[in-house]
Length: 68
Image (cartoon, rainbow, N blue to C red; front, side, top):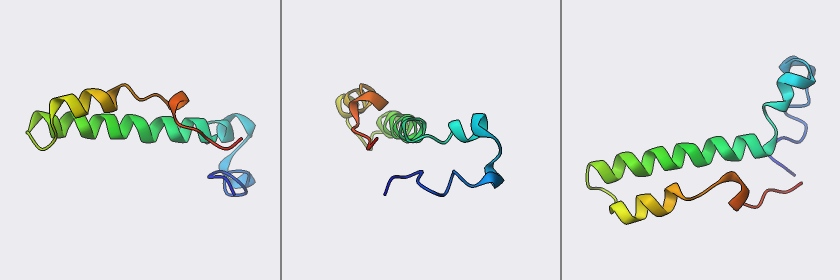
């Protein structure tokens, strides 16, 4: 089962345009951007090495496999 199967297809979430925001690729992209921000903040305060934060910042939604 995918992240968005059934849950976001419910009419309570609006029309097809609004539901399009919740497609798996967009969800994964938001997760990655969150992880990048966290890594950068942790590097700033010395919890994470700067090199590790830079490596995490190279991630893109396209680099993470998502079931179709």
